[in-house]
Length: 427
Image (tube, rainbow, N blue to C red):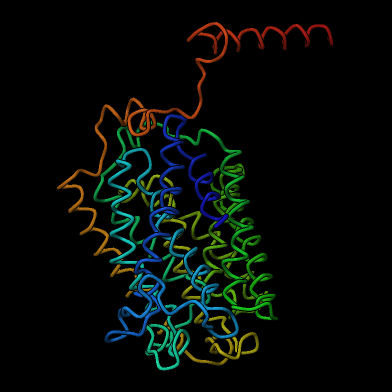
């Protein structure tokens, strides 16, 4: 759960000051909406007995009926329910970064409810629901069981899913006013680093927790998550140094998220050395990918496509190269460990299927909402400040400083004079 407010600060720091509250709220509301839906029917559609073709779970656990007092594997069933809820919450929230500064809050809220129902719950069923795990005679999803692709903690179900959805929604809503001509710089880089740090910490629950036990595999996932993230930071900063001449704090934070994304599907299937390779590749490729929006003309405000879609693809596909049963006997050997190209093919098919399904369904949902109740705020609201328009609040009350509306500039002048006088005395 810590990851979702972490994401809110990561995204919130990257937008302009007049949109920070709206950005924070877009993540926060996902906690509210998805939690309720998960109990009502989301968990059942995801982990209930398959109703046909490995595509969707049934009504076995509606309202969490039949969960209390039972177990899955070695844990109480209710613990697993809550653990999986956290994945559902943050996946929906991730999409918001692509449409920063221009989405109506209540339309976004409705979108989350529809998208989780139509896209996330089915895809999570495909990927996470293994035969017999939540019920002795239950059948699970087609990617986990029929195809046999590997996804330890959500590279397909979470990151490729959210990244493809982000691209679709960015196309539906269109570009921000003034983009890319006007500079739209992050208003609070300390927020960005704070959010990245909270995400990095929370990700240990995400990845190590997916071992579903306090065991050696959890330790493997913990260390692979750490070193992949570190390698990705280095990879991103090296690209910035070569391309731009300076390493940036925004680049370090973005590189960390890219590494976390990429190692997510692979955390329990690769060695620590393999994890370093995945992180380094992800850091480099994601740093390069974020510039594609300028060449292709889509306004993915906070680089959800460049980081989550590309990073998810890197991690998912590199499992086909670097997975080893020496780390996890329940996995498979990749190409570099003598397993041939079969696993790589399975990984590619899983990635393509999730990407296509998410993109098409998200585009349809977004298009319908936009044409009916409207998804994008007015130009006046966007230019004047989405926080005031959507929430009747602002993140920073500068007018509360002494001296009225012009007090900010006066205060700055006073501080500048004091600094100048102090420098003169020292001289």
